[in-house]
Length: 217
Image 1 (tube, rainbow, N blue to C red):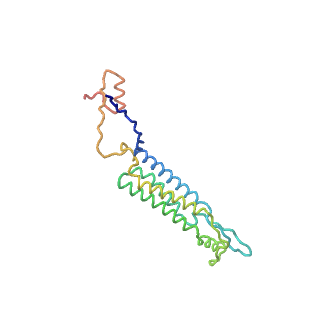
Image 2 (cartoon, helix red, strand yellow):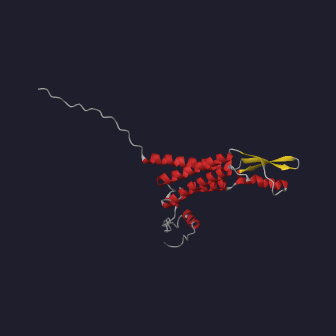
Image 3 (cartoon, rainbow, N blue to C red):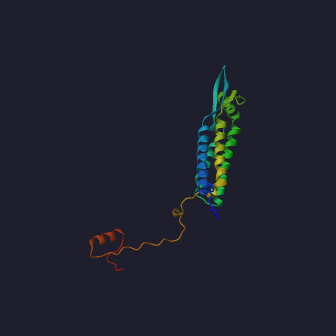
């Protein structure tokens, strides 16, 4: 009579699920990178020339140009707000973190929309033409716009994406260490070391601490 022995069949190994901490670290790194890069782009691009034209003066034409700050200072201001919100995300927890993340997203959205609206601005150069010629009805001629407003809007979009990441994954991100926070409770004082009056070095140490070495404990 033959006996058949069961041979264990090797089973395919299942891939271990990625730890949750890895996903939170990736989203954290992406949020920081997007927010910082977006704010940098907005601040730099808003200082570039957005519009150019000419104003008729006498028998000639005077070239005029306006940068993003001349047309609208809103994108740069909102970029600064976004940077502050990006840092503040790590200083708050729970509901406070959601509020700050929402502020981060809104600052990016506002910066992008205001930059996009300024891409077709004409009023700023018309005012420059009126001031230059001394004629209140003067307008700019041969008006043209550069691509910098759209670069600024792209920077605002990056800030918006950072805010959306903070809203989605911010609850998993680490916060500032609690050891730097004070809860108002008095901390226990360390017991002063025993001073031997017969040892001069102990007397000097006690005097340095502001203690009376002659007083009995």
